[in-house]
Length: 146
Image (cartoon, rainbow, N blue to C red; front, top):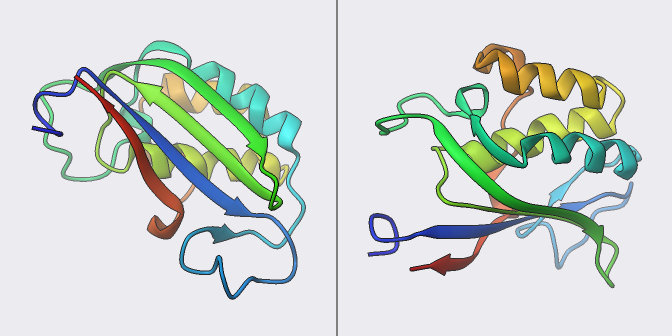
């Protein structure tokens, strides 16, 4: 069972970071029209590597016994079509965890918070300190590990 028997999963989130939208991508990527600081976003994303309590990035009503997860890998890059791609691999995910992380990473990329503040948000275990949830249409499940 992809949800209950998985040893890990890998998700991809796609961001179209340009002022003009795309007829081809509007349903499959979140368009952020203001320029993003990819370096700051990558620095912030490094803080989630390893085992942490991800309560700050958990959605309301998450059915879980605990909120500790181990993130084994993250990457942030621009693909050949100019899309900003964030990938995350972990032993499990909380409800809306990836979208909440991405929303907070985008706030980092916009300069609204620093990479250090991103780490403080993670450690706070307080969802109200994180940024709004990224929209669902940029999120894709890439791989399930059994």
